[in-house]
Image 1 (tube, rainbow, N blue to C red):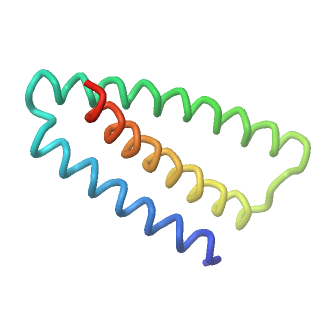
Image 2 (image 1 turned 90 degrees about the horizontal axis):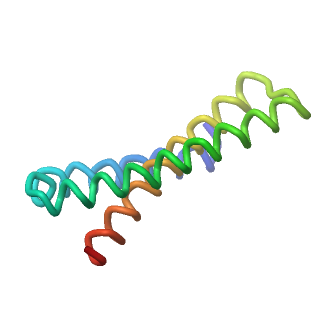
Length: 94
């Protein structure tokens, strides 16, 4: 596994732990549900952008299995990081 993939796995782990901690502590009330909902909307938008980007990359420069695996790990880590950062942002804003 490359260095980028290793870093991505750590980012994925910490972002997921942040989400789980927020969902257990503050995510059960109405305000917490609003924060999670807004963060989910932003993350879904990011998912669409990543899907389009990967599709364009695959169209113009086909990826082999290892490259696709690394892009998949990086994209998933970016999605969870986006979700965690949006939770933090909306938690402070709302």
